[in-house]
Image (cartoon, rainbow, N blue to C red; front, side, top):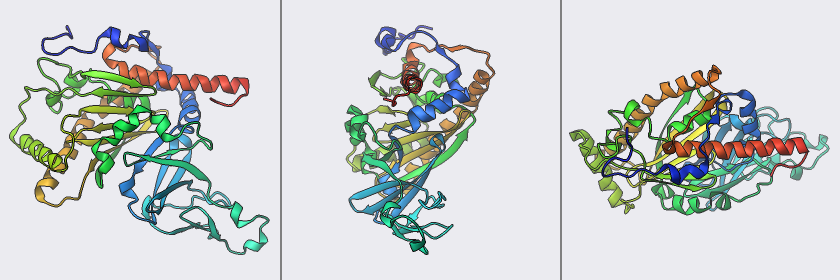
Length: 399
């Protein structure tokens, strides 16, 4: 089928050829050994989003995040109106996990094992019979983790000495994220699900539309049409290691009456909140975050590797203000249900793809030009993995 249909001009093969045109190896999409390299080369030394400031709205608020891909549990605390800190969620006495709750409000944390008690700013406040130890309290504070905020999104970096600050890491993406509605969000809706597949296969599913007309003929009808039957994006941009695409919408789509009612309510509240009604950009923030910062869908998807063949997906729709009326509640519930509906159609085929690759039947994967974002992710991941391997072999520090 000819992609160059009237009324829509897809991104050309030449425009993305700089990313490469050769097949990519299949092994990195399922091999446990490669996943272990990713853990060391990427997830233990890269800025990763862990939540939103609306989850820790006041001094004493905290949240805990589990990072299986880095064998870490992280405690994020709001110390004051202007200060957020992050620590390994580990008592400095004998390594016991300090906080079991996922979120709450506390000014101090006590280890369940021997009652070492820490301030939410990390200092050791007290420990029973401490004069029997051979160390000072000042040297027993919680192990700190780098933390910073952009567009209301909280990021951490597990590298003890990050080479880049968050803003430098995000580059031009930082300013783009600051312009999204989630920078002003005060609440969110969330659903979490697990996929029996590699994290890159899971991520890739949501950064290409080649599958849209086949898996989503009903739920995706607003995103494809006669002029663009695959619903390909209007353009791609690359801000290494990040990427964006501009979503195309079918101007001839005819939503059903209840859909139209919901869309109109979402748009009404977006305009009331003075949001940009034009932006349709979808941001892929390396390594494992998506943000769709449109006025009507303040969406993020956090794809967390659990194992080489298992991934957790955290999907959030962010909101400005609370549910103050039935119309707003209806619009938000409809948006969340629509997102869940689409994701439920993807899960089985992602898992089928992993099973097929893990069988060893294929040595390579072929990407077409409209899967450019998939290739870009692979390039960025593999570049870091190969650099890590080279540094390990040379005995030097990883750049």
